[in-house]
Length: 404
Ligand code: ADP
Ligand code: ASP
Ligand code: MG
Image 1 (cartoon, rainbow, N blue to C red):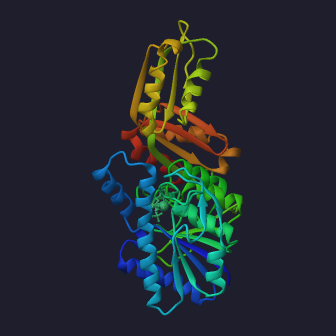
Image 2: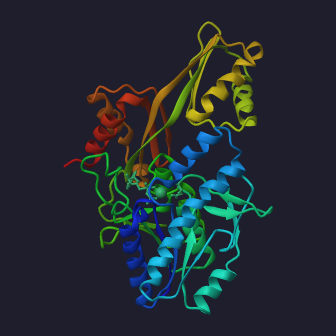
Image 3: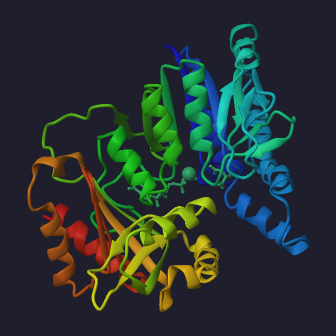
């Protein structure tokens, strides 16, 4: 018995039958004597459909109005789910982000939660003994306007609520049975993990495994939220995300992830003198462009090349900014490649295992896949590849580490 936050993603609430299934999971948890706060995403592809609707009217709509629109998806699924629970004769109330006290900053479309004023939820739980259903993905800013947290943000709503309410457990129900060694929908032989550490999951989520919103993992680690990822379709234990995972049968790596939202820019023929890198990356930073992997070539004939990756949505802006400073940066030209992918392996076990990088590169070599850039940290190795090689690269690397 305790307080449990249960989050259900879009596929899990996609239609009436699935909403009834979710209502049953919530009701079962409640009938066992737990207090339940459920956080729901919009049904199926609703959020994408709303974005399309907006584009038909105004392709350059303000972010404030987009948030006003996108937040409606979650309101539909939550009220419908509450209605399904009403038919079971249980006390239930659905709340929007602002009714639930989710206060955010004002960065429309990518707002951050500042605080959750939990009084309303707490009183529904304690005084009315109700099941509380809260819209994921949204909050309210200091102007009283609706904000959204960024795509996939309902995971973060759930973890933030679990932290603010000091819940005993936060369960993220989704359409796969837990966290796997790679995306089980695309990689043959992907294995479900019983446990994974916050640090490894944070890397995997940041490197493209969308199964959890990376900010939700960050928050779960910070507030020590007991987190579990499991399926709303199969009644089975899922994957626990914890500070320290069991050491038994520790593998070198925990998973493989891919991220297609990358593009590479190369400044070719830059003068080889101090201060150039400083100038290039300051310019990009001042314009809110995040740079990921950086590679600087050895100088020749007093020139060098500087290559780096940015998000695909930032590449045209980055090029324009640097072209605008061509005379002071004195490069020959800028080469842009938007058809790239970043494939990464993650695992705390690689810290004390020499040769993990060689194993990864060997798998790519045997599959005849060329590596353009490499970046490493203590618990991850990423390579930049041609987008066309994505699936074969992920499969080859996964087979090498996890194959029989
Ligand atoms: P939800 O709508 O429930 O939030 P998401 O689509 O956001 O679900 O996340 C679940 C999906 O994440 C799965 O269907 C799966 O294809 C994908 N995924 C990517 N990498 C992994 C991984 N390592 N383990 C599990 N699922 C993964
Ligand atoms: N509905 C939102 C999205 O599709 C939030 C979420 O599902 O987590 O991104
Ligand atoms: Mg999701």
